[in-house]
Length: 259
Image (cartoon, rainbow, N blue to C red; front, side, top):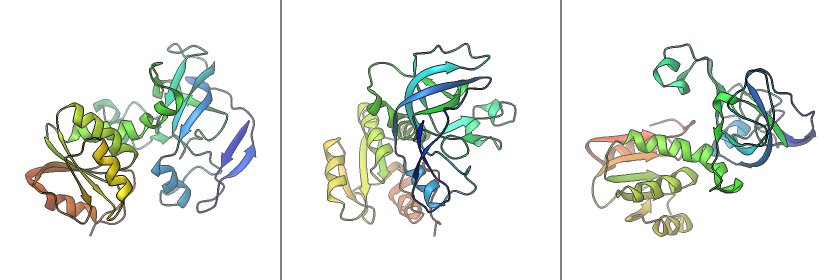
């Protein structure tokens, strides 16, 4: 199969011909139809996340169809379409796994980081960490939901019932969250890089009631803010922007130092 391989952090991906992997117990072999690019992929390639599996096939917003199943897989059948996200495996036994906080498992493995991911023709994944996908979404539209959609929605839930919601960094996750928040009747305040006219116009088209640079203050105090941009200096900015008792959620995997 064809694959794009990271051989060392800070280097470009290299096209390689690799054998098609075999699914082990509890795993499925997936023929990949689409794999979106996440900011976390860039963090891995740039060496900002430590100790990746090397050589590594990155990519964790994967959509494809099951080609084969390993021993013990009863949930899926060949031909079914599934999505494969960032969280690829957890132990299922620790206190975090037993309290619905699997993302904090100390033994967790991650797709496209410590497990080969989706920049290839095929990949294997643990069947318990795959999602069945409805036909309502085409492959390209479904792929970003496997990370931007997941972390965005989880971050939104962390804000409780906040009605005035600030989004710092208006990229993949924020533009999905903005649509969900507007559907729920919330007000969205979008913060972009100063001078990023294109992102600001995009936020307006998606219904933001106010749009400005991350160096600006909103016209009123916010109930909550979510930070998707990997910039630590945005944390004190967001804290200043929220009302007393407000919530600030840091939604990314990696962030530069907080002042």
